[in-house]
Length: 64
Image (cartoon, rainbow, N blue to C red; front, side, top):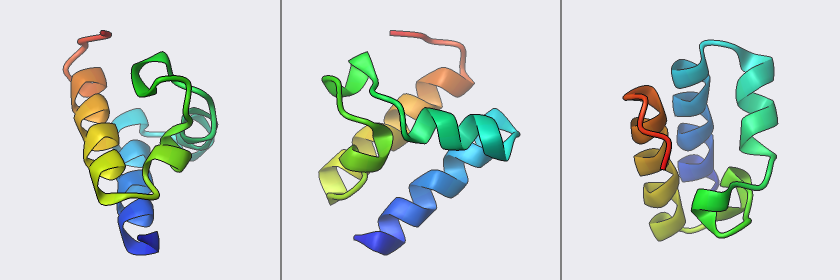
């Protein structure tokens, strides 16, 4: 699980192109994740996939 969580965080850094911004986002509750932080959600395989999908939407400018 830790490997998945690290991979998701690395993807966040790539999307936000800033370590501090990615860290803040990764540790802040997200409405799209039912109030969980991306870090919390990334602790399971299913959650990590959900966070990666969210990052994809953010990268494409789809804020839903």
